[in-house]
Image (cartoon, rainbow, N blue to C red; front, side):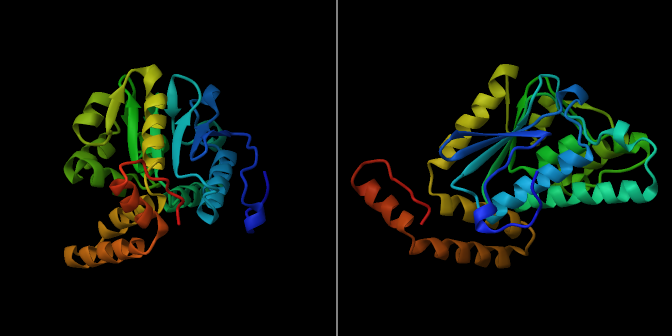
Length: 275
């Protein structure tokens, strides 16, 4: 893996040891966590490689308009941090490793194009936090979810106490986090954590299908929607409305807006260029 100093010429995606990347169509990238022998648990290297990947895509989306984040193996999406690697770590080693994980999650949050989590198996602890950091989640209907950190003497430290309440409500989130108990995919769906449930073999294909639908829309519009929902949700309502209008106004003079209106009137599909 190369270092984290980027120039536009260095923005292409390299090969990694713990994650797989695949260009499944001209506009859709599939990213797979690839440590199935340990339930795709995060080790330090995976954190570094994910941070590297997300930072490259922040610098240059390389023509991609949507990402599907999934995992190899059928049992688990991600079991959280690799506790075997963490066994015996000093306080300083633990803190330094967690800083790697923090940077990776923050970078994922900043990726400007939509990221769909295709949860093909169980998502525990940091694995659930990873899915929560994505824009929305499709899941295997037999998957289970949990934030188990309190059962080993820590707490969620990668957005769990902030993103989960935004998804399921404060009271439900406190129960989930304070008990550390797993819950079913059906409950995750009923509580609004997961958008759709599918049979195990259909999760990834359905997520890719949705990614293709998004990628066919005007990419500048989709980016502005993602930005407006994220930042507007942190603002007082009237300020958020103004933020939304500013985002809207950035699209008025784009070639894609002109193409969209022209295609509508000509009764054809638009051809968006992201310009």
